[in-house]
Amino acid sequence: MFNFLCKASKTTDITIGENAVSSLFDILEEERAKVFIIADIVPWNLYGKNIITKLKNKGIPYSVLTISSEDKNKNYTTFAYCISKLTENSIDKNDYIMAFGGGVTGDVAGYIASVYKRGIKYIFVPTNLLAMADSCIGGKNGLNYGNFKNIVGTVYQPDLVYVNLEYLADMPKKLITNGYAEIIKHAIIGDKALFNNVKLNKFSKIKEDVKASLLVKKKYVEKDEFSFGERRCLDLGHTVSHAVESKSEYAVSHGQGVITGIAINAIASYKNGFCTKAVMDEILGLFNDLGLNYSCPYSVNDIMPYLINDKKKEGDNFYIPIIEKIGKVRVVNMSQLQLKSFITSGLNS
Ligand SMILES: NC(=O)c1ccc[n+]([C@@H]2O[C@H](COP(=O)([O-])OP(=O)(O)OC[C@H]3O[C@@H](n4cnc5c(N)ncnc54)[C@H](O)[C@@H]3O)[C@@H](O)[C@H]2O)c1
Image (cartoon, rainbow, N blue to C red; front, side, top):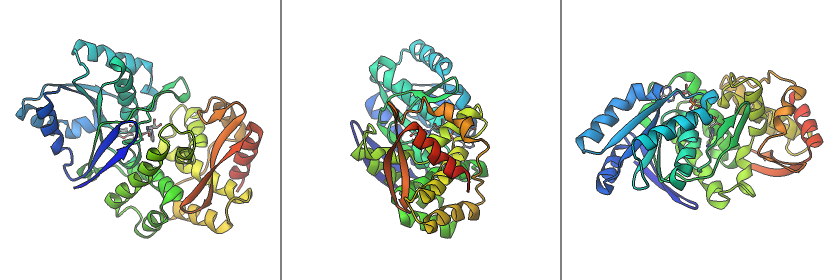
């Protein structure tokens, strides 16, 4: 079992391993807390029975609310439905909300945990690779409004995270590649050894890659929890990704959007003199070796309208991470015109 802390406004205790979640039941028993589980129906049908058996064996009171985890449901309708069930079940500040699912479930449950009764205790059990390697820590959560992604949200750290590695065993290939989008992003931002590992081992060392990926993220979260500076590096590829996801009405997955966004950024970083051709080639070469399609289905004019409401925009300034080397990214300030020209250069390879 591998354990580490992420120390921000609240400290998150993260456990990674086969059956990592087992120690949770002792904590709940000791604290005499109820747990209200917000679960994505897909992994819950696969693994929920086991969790319920353990809760029952220890006599821990629980409720389960299943949701359909899709970006188009990451909204106030789902939020209101969850709140109605929390009040029906008289959940209070001694109790925990637990997210059981991927990035969407975590974003919804984390947002609810941060605002329900002005904040209650929060556990995240990520069930797909993207959530295991990225979204389970850092405390960002959010809801979409129409086609504007993550336009509402808070930063609220989970108390406990359990990365149950055995959930990886039967994970569909698409969810593995989606998760690798964020793993590769973390590698490009701050871990060349992780980049080389993925290059060498492809998808065969997932468990090691999950740990390394979370350790890169932890570093940025601890330094700059609220994204005033360095944490903006973690947005690499995400400005384009969010616009592409929104434009497609969420038919393009977040992982696919991030791969496209990173590729455009790598090409544009080279063309604008931030990195060498060798760096760009290494990134695109890795995507090709892994069979990750990075072509963008849209023109710059298609995606620009979605950038106007991007969270990285302040006045006429966008804070955009650019790539200098594998393992080194820097945030630069661009006007809307400069951003348009940057993206255009990345679209024309
Ligand atoms: N808060 C953060 O730090 C952060 C970071 C990255 C992404 N995100 C957000 O996360 C979302 C994308 O996350 P996602 O791709 O996990 O989306 P998701 O939660 O919709 O999960 C994708 C799919 O995985 C399925 N799934 C989950 N666990 C499974 C399992 N064990 N076996 C089989 N299927 C399983 C789900 O049912 C769903 O169909 C986006 O909304 C993005 O904005 C948030």
